[in-house]
Length: 433
Image (tube, one colour):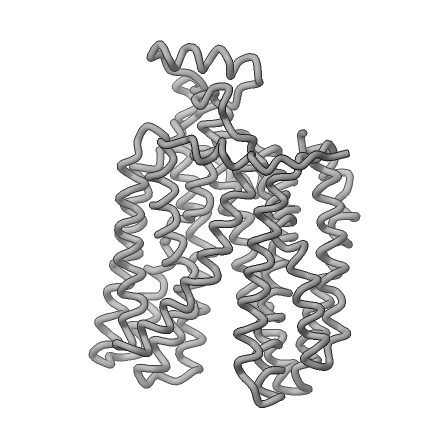
């Protein structure tokens, strides 16, 4: 049913024109992943209350949820180099206001204004994946082009690296130098990343581009060698889209809900893990478990990209949904450190494959010229889940204890296979490949 090819990532590394935008995307990721925990750390170290820090962090998440998909919609219609620098400038302006306010211990209301501006962050995961998909689907990389599934696995590994290290870097700088040092470094990285991404013009998706089939990609590759353009639709495709992809695509809505549940149970899991560690008097338990989970997830994502499955993509989505829901549904059994370790390890085996398949399903179910917006919307689902999941779990933890938080997370987790089965017909009808 499948074959393992350890050399699949060579095709990724051979694409030298991707180095600039991949490094730029990585720097932008580091800023994005450190924002929430970095804001909380910075504000509490500067003397603001946890209540204010938490609400400011939530304000940033909510602003990203509402604004980021609309930025990506403009990116698809106008191009990355016209929209991304402007959105990044607004984000950096908000960051500058927040850093100055914290350094001078200014009024709290200014922090919330800055938080809204920081929510204009362009989605680096969507921007980079859109560039890769454009290069592959339009035949610009020729016969040596990597498979999309390999690309999504590779990008998933980069996501996990950013997720593992950027919060730790932010906390370390804020603690060792000054409260503002962590996010200041992140802001510099964001500016450098946007510059690299924007200057990499040869890989930028052209507004209105169309995916080609295999035979057309071969012709496009030949045309590309001769200096002709390929994979771009007529001028009418360059007009801004009237309706959001979340309104027109039922598959994007299903993927949005799935990632919202993932964000919810993962947020509850992290919060409950910290609470259980404090309950047992050893806060280091939480950091060790969360780091181990991220590391195992990274390894599994890397390995998953080397497996060439012959199973249809829609079946992969269903299978991964059932597996991750069942695995993290065992959170309800956590009542000790040993059971916490066991569930963490079990769940981390399926987390990265599920995200890889979700991104592949998104690419396979929407037009190429709408991909940036579509990926941003499904990532917004995870952001939404991370915003409300820990809040619900936190109330239960305060009222009952850490195990109640795990029970809440288990409910969110088992809803994933329920949603997959409920919308099985939609998944089967819309996911190609």
